[in-house]
Image (cartoon, rainbow, N blue to C red; front, top):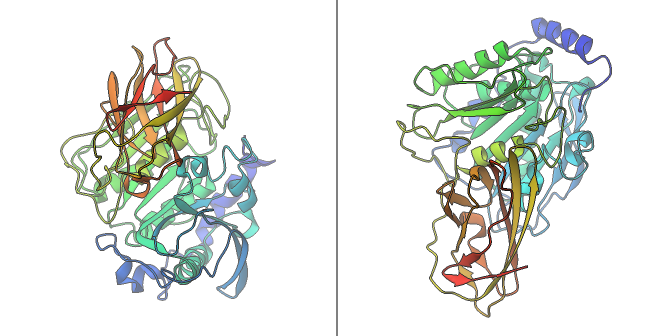
Length: 442
């Protein structure tokens, strides 16, 4: 579990430090000067179409008169002509950028970048910034300035979609993600605040931004009441209907996800409460953190990847059950376009499971736009997924490509997956068809 020694006392000291942290946004901040980063207007960066000036590894940068560092993860198949989503992962108090980049405090590699790197399947640039004194006090706005400076360096050196910047963090990292939601709502498309509190300030905090809150009902470090307060600010900012989301019963070891209704177009609010304490990778049916079994990465990834190219326009009056679903890609599958092979691996626990699916094009023609159809065993219901859209959530399901994985060349493979609840039957689907052609199941 990613908690340092003397965690409770250290959090208390950090909370006191907020009194000395200014909530002023520096005049040079991206939030004040970068109109092109407004989420309503898609824009690419100077790094597009050029050889990459940054590579995976640790980088140093001067910010507010200090040398700051961050760990960068660039996709192995990076293409300078394609604008990439960027996810910033902020560490907890006394955690490190290395902890986030490797996932070593929960399960190395599996939990890298809060479990999102595995789900991204080389589609996303990841950044793990290092906080001063292993925290995010944001004194005089210096951590926000650090974020601005990293963004400038990334935009100059890599091809970035400026409408696809996201922040996620646990505990103090959640507090920093919240500070970004308050101060940089036109620079970041959405944030995910895991077990956070108002420890890094909230400069501004009056504009809408897509907001996901995740919090344990038995959190004794940063109480869930504080998490609800953070959530409610953006419920109001985003024009959502006031409500009191249901939360799991104590002792149930389950989680409940609620998507708010009535929110302004492109600014959803989602609340995920779970029956546990101050932990970053909770699992249903058992205590403690788990890299493979935690449901949180699937919820966060589904929340982030619903935004495909600028501001989406969902129906603001209809709530979506469970985590939100990514918007389908722009391509239309052509029926009967070649043979295929599918490998499906299920990881199940008491009343939940994840299923990782690898699809290989064994035909001789490139597939441009795909849909994979399969039937879930009775009692299984999808609550979130990655690298595809899934509808409906039970019975015969169609998984459709998203914009970044619509093309599947001969002999190429892609990975998708989902998280589901079950009532006892944890079997995988018995058959799959890709664009109407039956697949071999390995």
